Length: 492
Image: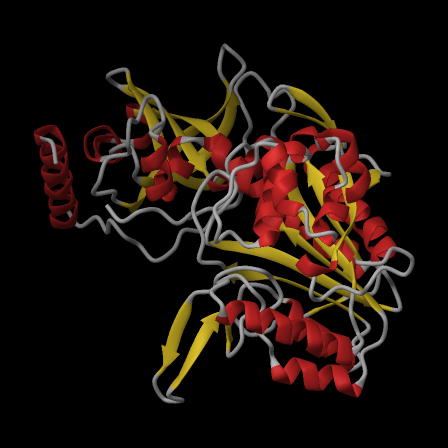
């Protein structure tokens, strides 16, 4: 801690003591406002009489700037993302209140302001204060108060100060909230029911990922933080909820980078009597409607390149994409046992212990993914990497599955859902065998899910969308940490 900061902390505590001794409550219980700052800006957006408005208003906010002119002060207060100027004059508020503001109010304090609205000579909407109330004495100074909080690591660790110092960051999360609202409206308008399913599970299924483990003392049993929402939502299809969705946190014990956070928000939805073609239409609606809600357009610019989220999106088979961009049918090569030879020919590195599905993914990531800028549904995956998807109705060895790639990153994943209980048991048992052989990301066989399928699940389409990645796209960000309020960081 620097000496200057220590001095500031000491001074603020001395001010707190002085206020208390003077009979000022530095932490009152409430303050009645007539307007928020946003409401003031909307209500008084037009011209005002030369002397200002006669209407007495009351608002409140955090003090962000002060310009002391001796017997008067101009200051700016913030109310969330909205800011407004106040004008405090000694002969209007009186000696005591003016001293409170001039000497005992620091940047970062919350104050209540009563007064009337006027416009300055530069036409800036302002409050002519007639009364001031201390609402919260800040004991710690705002970071880099004149320039905003810029250090990336500090911004993520002290997100509350990031929001105070950088109004554009707060606006970003306001937009993310609007995006979430849009997604829910899209589902509700189509008759979907929103539900909640368990975070703690006896079997972490529904995705190829390494789970976090924990232990429940009372039950004396090992549990996992969920890696997906799929298994329980499909059980609800069995139970008769024909259109269901959930937006929830999932946890995957993986690395941290610009596209990955171990805890993230996932959307999953299931629709009875539908298939992956219906899920493409649904996905287009979710994304385009969210973009319109947040930005008023489906045309974006990301990393200085144009991007259109207007339906319909491109549809392309994985096989065709491999042939176009790698010069070889990698899907067929895997089916014929030539996958590793092809990887070597394409100069894709791997180790002897690397599972085939990882080798396959690396070829795709190196040769195909860089070409997927505009929204593209990559369709029809090998059955080996899709244990929960229905076999393709016309392409042997493949399943009816798509992944949506936008700006070179995966955003969504969907299937025609496998509802054959015999086939599903066989595939999950095969996955369990792979897990026992050391594949930490192989699916777990969940007996309760398999029993549910034996009771009968209607044909269905299922969809998963990474909400944080979608937010990155729609809000024009290049790091997932920018759209998660409190991303996971290394301990200090």
